[in-house]
Amino acid sequence: MTGLRMERPDLEGLGEIILAESYQIRTYTKGDETAWIEIVKETFPSSGNEWNTERFQRDFLDCPQFRPDSLFFVTYEGKPVGTTCAWTESPDEKKKGILHMVAVLPEYQGKKLGYVLCLSALHFFRENGFEYVKLNTHDFRLPAVKTYLNLGFVPEYTDDNSKKAWSIVFMNLGLKK
Image (cartoon, rainbow, N blue to C red; front, top):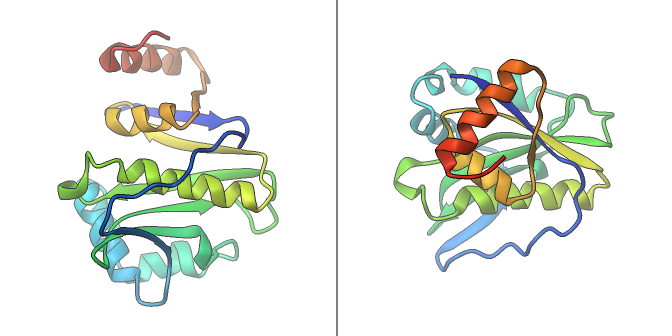
């Protein structure tokens, strides 16, 4: 498992947010902690169990840069089935956004919901004057990496290990570097 970094160098040319019938995008409302934790635990079984309401409170709600309108949910018939966050490293950051914690319940994966969630966060960043967006992911999350590439993110080559990891990812995706 190798960590990868990506960047969308600008926020131009974002596509339209289109959802299938019965799906909607909305932002955080008080009480969504339970749904968020469930989504993360089911999406990331190896690390998701580290999340509980106390950690959500500490790592999101208590952070000065947390904004309810930057934590997105995709719902199916009103039930939250996916989430992502338009995050910043500090409350004063106005230039660099971070696409954070993209997760979709396993039974809803493969329906382009992660794409729509990410696109919603990118629109949020653009509407709030940000210039570019970064993210961290892992080499085994090939569908996610493909989604990020389709959204205009590009790999960051930080050292020889990342160059090798990216080369393997592109090969596994059947793409040329």
